[in-house]
Amino acid sequence: MITRRFPALARLLRDEGGTLTIEFLLWLPLLCFWLVASVAFFQAYKSRNDALNTAHALSDIMSRKVEVTEGFFDELYALQARLLPRAPRGTHLRVSSIQYVGDDDQYRVLWSRAVGGGEPLPQQEITGPMLPVMADRDTVLLTELDVPFHPFTGWAGIGSQTWTFHLVSRPRFVAAVPLIDGDGELPPEDDDDDHQGDQGASNR
Image (cartoon, rainbow, N blue to C red; front, side):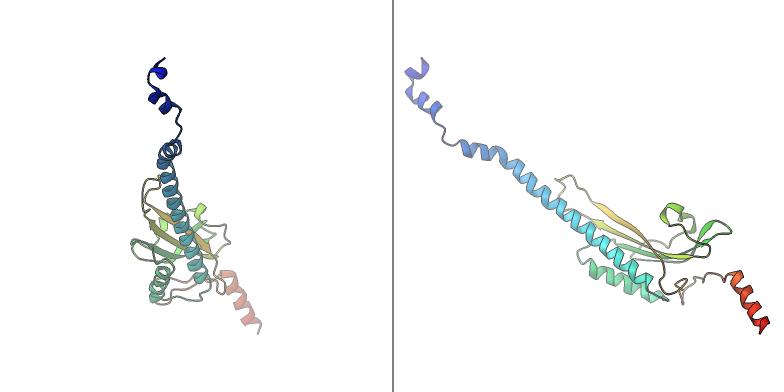
């Protein structure tokens, strides 16, 4: 009845023009959020992956050393900065040489150096879960890298955080990597080896 009296209203109700525009306007906020979230998640994934690869590279370099000096850690930190040129300030690097003493069933820090901030590894912070099963007097190198991450936006639910990596490697060419001009100490000689050496000398 109303449409008969108002033919213009009837034509308006039957007109489907502009439907696509209205649907696009309804979907636009969701599409914008999806685009921003995709970029934010990709940024976080790439940042963490780059930091992990850098940590592996630094750990591999340490495992190939036969000795280190105090100045070497500054060079290692400079290399880390070149591998992570977009990392914000506050990146910390710490390298420690740790020995397992079977008689006492405990781990001992032979030396530890931190660059970029932070403190050397305290003896009391060494725990079994962070280190592999080791033989008596065996040593490992613990490389720790902390890389801050700040997303370009917080819309996607990803906030600022720090990528933290703890990588353990075994020295490849020496029993323990010495710090030749620091206050670290070399692992003590095995008593059995000294005894065998004395026996060999007496037999001669």
